[in-house]
Length: 152
Image 1 (cartoon, rainbow, N blue to C red):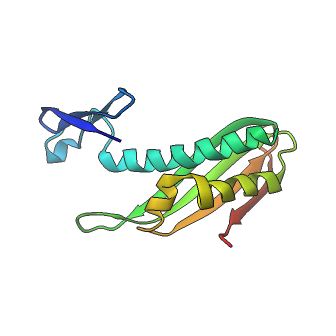
Image 2 (cartoon, helix red, strand yellow):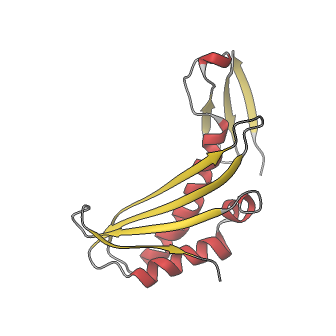
């Protein structure tokens, strides 16, 4: 994998990887930026959410689960002092659908965490992650099941 980062002035940058898609980065005005784009640490957490989210939804689709909506939220804690690294995170999988099988979701989370998601494998060496889930009925409001995946 190759990544190029080009400075655009002040604290604004554009990054591009092998796919050719350009991503803008910036910082807060308090440190010289224009507050016009996401921060680098946000991209790391978005990458984590995207990596595991793509695994989990792909596995649920292969298991023919009736998912109507799916969201992954990463709640990351950072230390106060520089370099302000992430000290822990909760990854929350929110699944909406009629009769989504809890065991299918747990297996999808397990496969992502233990086998497929390189972001989770790599970042898991840097900080602990708690993996929790909620399954909502097709109305998106009624909580049907919730729980936590714990590695074996």
